[in-house]
Length: 245
Image (cartoon, rainbow, N blue to C red; front, side, top):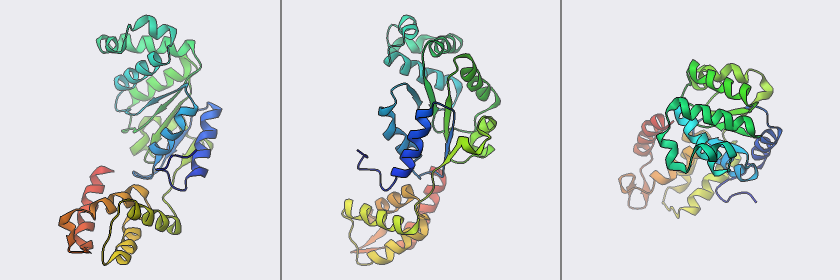
């Protein structure tokens, strides 16, 4: 059953599901707020052998996340090396990497790196090592398939078949979603129709942006009695969304 918080994304979920099942590296990309992480995480319970790294800022953060996942999955090598999750914190970066690599080599795992931050050459080298040493497929999630987001991992997903794009909603779906979010949050306003029109214009169909605009419209600074002050709301939204994305 699809989670209640996911709206009209069954085709995209199926696309991600098929790629996870194949256990081959792929790249999910799409703008901030489009729902990449939400869709991916909704499917992870179906794939217990997928090691999901929510934060992929550095190689050390990734290996620490993998160590926790391997321990929870009762990897024999990880259980021998780590008495408990607190023990992971005491290991040096080199030791941690060695334990994780050996654990990957003994099992049939897949890895997903979320929230890439323009990974460096050394980061990409570590990913290639994981893919080679343990024959572990490593997939990634980024805002785009370009160098500014995927960094030196870009060349690992150079083929079109290895990329899966999540796009903003089309106008009709975006309108339906916006009305559902308004109803769910019990937002009321005398200029609601005008506000909904502006939501579609401002958000460009991005579901995260739609939710953010509706949430902002509840604040008293953007209200005058039952009227939403659209222009100042939009100005602040653009500033906040720029930094959030």
